[in-house]
Image (cartoon, rainbow, N blue to C red; front, side, top):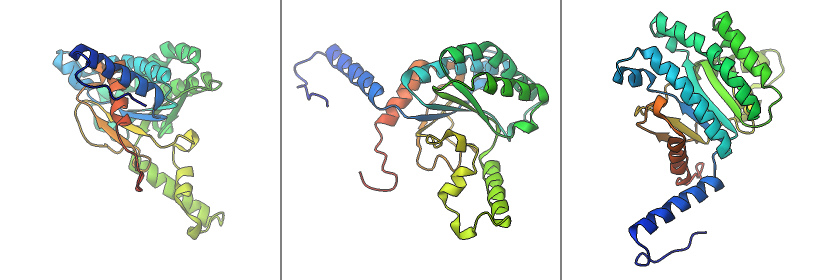
Length: 264
């Protein structure tokens, strides 16, 4: 509950301080349990600095480390990051090869910090289609953090929302074919259970979806799961995304009235 102070009592600086205190209070009270981020703008960040695009991807991985710890400190339960899409294979082979090497470098240096912070790694996507060295890095990170019970750091790697839905439909069709399920028994829950986010329950669906770099589209990300997510778009390029940027996005989320189709 906020006190309705009279505007003529305080100076401008006092009012600013009250706003900052109110923001801090709300950030502590109403944190989204699942935050998903489309990390966009690495290439543009590098080009603005006359650097190769891969320099932006490397800096973007440093941002992942910072934002993981920020989200964990805020009390987020699941942080899902869109790292590589099923469409990203269309990029130049030199860039793709660099991106496939990043998970090894990233996890080698970051897993000890994740274990200390009690953060568990999860990876969803078509992992079996990745190079062997990428698969090894991913599997090792998952195994090494398996005993952690805090926030889940969930990477979408070689992931696409439409492909995920096709895979789920095939699984359900096979269950019907095997007489394990009747077609009239298929519900929302049936689909949920056959998606790649099923292991994240009860926080499978993002409360907040953030996209960086000023683009305002979903790009085939979590198409089923974001049906009622709050969307926040920011102009900040991913390598420049900071702890304060995350807090600003969460604060925007906290101003929304989530009705889920009803009245509240």
